[in-house]
Amino acid sequence: MQVPQLLVLFGSQTGTAQDEAERLAREARRRRLGCRVQALDSYAVNFWRFIFRKSLLSTSLCQMDFAVLGLGDSSYAKFNFVAKKLHRRLLQLGGNALLPPCLGDDQHELGPDAAIDPWLEDLWKKILGLYPVPLDFPEIPRGVPLPSKFIFQFLQEVPSVGAEELNTASSAPQRPPSELQPFLAPVVTNQRVTGPQHFQDVRLIEFDITDSSISYAAGDVVFIMPSNSETHTQQFCQLLCLDPKQLFMLKAREPGVPYPPGLPQPCTVWQLVSQYLDIASVPRRSFFELLACLSPHGLEREKLLEFSSARGQEELWEYCNRPRRTILEVLCDFPHTAAAIPPDYLLDLIPRIRPRAFSIASSLLAHPRRLQILVAVVQYRTRLKEPRRGLCSSWLASLNPEQGLVQVPLWVRPGSLVFPETPNTPIIMVGPGTGVAPFRAAIQERVAHGQTGNFLFFGCRQRDQDFYWQTEWQELEKKGCLTLVTAFSREQEHKVYVQHRLRELGPLVWELLDRCGAYFYLAGNAKYMPTDVAEALTSIFQEIGQLSKPDAAAYLARLQQTLRFQTETWA
Image 1: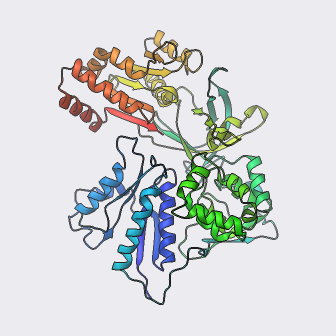
Image 2: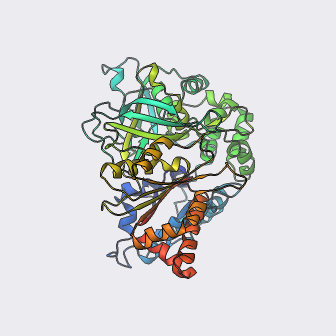
Image 3: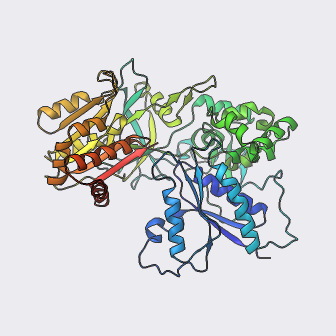
């Protein structure tokens, strides 16, 4: 009997969209519908560029029913911009929208699920109305676990391959490193660059990339694959009664299921837990849904079912999301359930560790065979006893090359910032805090090529605590290679930020942009700063350039369209 087939495409950086896509697939399987889940770019290489090709006909998708689910944050200016734009484009190509787009919002007190839950109910009604399933195919009840994606085949003896060959990373790759085969880069130095009184530990970390085939330019990004701490790995293995030394092979339960990327075959339980399972992440609702299905313990199962139900979302938010409770901590709270988890379900239950991206903060022209990054170590308190720590930044900060060889799996990709190659084009760079990292790479590269016209607006709290590369900037100033403008926000009664300095130097900024063809770059926190800087620029265009408000907005838009205004921001 042929069942209707759904295709779910996701675009995900943090894993949230992928989690929702897999939730859709699980709900489809419960309703006896076939479902394939794929990353957008694996379905059609560079999907976004492909779908917006002007040569596509307005009838291209006239045989297709579709629905778009977007995940966003309404505190940002372009809330769910991609979802809205994609929905419009699919309509232009003749597609039939089953529903208006779902716009999940991180800012809602119950998170994106507040919008997603009712939308999904409507979606299934639409789909099953159009593609009914035969009556002799009953829906699989929620309390019954679906089959796991993989079967763990534990090995009684160690294969002939040596333990060091099990890892997919390489210390001498034949081709440029990638996510599937990262380069194991030795850590050369790991130095704290904030003062002892500063609230945050910020590190300048240098890697040796000799013989790595890695080449990079200013604006490029390095991806790093972190590991769980030894303590957390041991704790997890004990909770689930797993032998960390046990070797296993994975077998897909169904044909066509891709093997987990980056996981060696065969693999030890220790490698799986320490390098692959993201046990330090905050679990999503899907985690509680599956955990409830697997629980043999009455009270624990009851609580897990409540957390995974629509009515239990407020309580789940208070228990898990608000205090940022981790998967490992949740399993500690449900010990009978944790001890009963079949290994086959580990890869369904726990997401994989995702690589973290860092702006490269050095140039090969200034530091041959080296790669440097600036890392703000994430640590904060919630109502839980243990402080919350960022997995990657805390792991990187813990690495001490003075105690022996320490290697980090990494690879390089082009970033979003592209710098002009013409020698006389000036550049204005606005980089508060660690946002200055890509501009150090750009300045080093441009100075090595003899390019002047480098204008850096740098902001931090206090000059003696978090003024990154102060000496380096001042030496370049003396040589006439750099114009440095600083904003120390906490050194006077009223706070002074980079946007205030831009306004103060409005005539210079206008002259550089309008008369000298300068490029303008902005990097740093995405929350308020980009909007504040854009407002400062438009006010300069109005006051100094004598443009009307609409013309000032159009001028800024033109700069963006011609890549003369570029941003690299992060949440």
